[in-house]
Amino acid sequence: MKIIKTKGDSLSTGDISRACSLCISGRKSVLFITGKCNKSCYYCPISEKRKGKTSMWINEKQVKEDSDIIEEINTCGSGGVGITGGEPLLDIENTILYITLLKKTFGKNFNIHLYTCRDDLNKTELKRLHDSGLDEIRFHSFSINHTIKKAREFNWTLTIEIPVIPEEIKQVTELIKESDKLKVDFINLNELEFSDTNSDNMQKKGFTLTDDNLYTVKGSYETAKYVLDSIKQPLKHTVLHFCTSSNKYDYQYWNRLKNRAKNIKKDFEIVQKNGLIKKGVIFAKEGESLEQTVQKLKLKLKNFSIEKKDIGLRIETTTQNARFGARKGYQCAEVLEIPSAEPFDLEVTFFNKKGKLME
Image (spheres, rainbow, N blue to C red):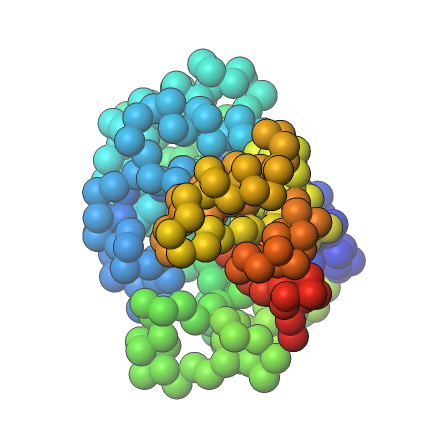
């Protein structure tokens, strides 16, 4: 069977879902409904900040009001959202509420997919999700259960999404056969990863890191590739999509940040090809206010802003202004910033007194 390389670093046996296409281009935001879950998967990667908590998030922004969701989606230029958790359907009322809100706000072409582990959904619950406008439902399951069979009765995209556990070939192969019989639209195979919260469990299972990656599990990629290569006859109904770790981070995550950066950048900031925002920063001298620093350096209004960071207040401006400030005796630096909803400095390189970047 022919294997296609997507625009991201992933592999597929056919055209991938619209939701996945939007993800790869960075045009999917992530709506995190709740950190609570009724399962206890040893490979769960959710951070301590969210795991088991009832707080909602849209991408990296905590949701205080509904307007936070709308604003972040607009800022990222997203054409859809992926709803996740935890288990979002432990709070099915809220989930349906937000599917309805997003469809009403952005229109019927706004693509919404949802991840769930629940294997006890009844037909009434599935119908409510379908009727609210949900475009794609993704089940985290290693076998076809009654809920998945019920879900196939509705006219939406039906997907099964699982991590690829090294050498677990027989179970995945059987799942593929059964999915094709049921006319499941897609099976997404995700490269298994380490995280801060699952690393202890993963090590107890005997998993190790790949030689050239800080996150991926050794053998996961090879197992997925073996499964794809071993299917000689084309499937009639189901498309297989292997989503690699690099596809998630190098394409989905960074392309979303690139889109966001273009929409939030100030006049004096530069968006790098990798999506980082480059700028200069100037710190006031002891006993001098930032306003006095601005006056002394004769900074023009459109070429700076005063921002509060974890280390305190600073002037953000062009790198040229920061270089000039360094020559005038101020502590100045060039900054590369992650342009998320909670931006932070990825790299800070100080200028010396001659206005040259220090190594």
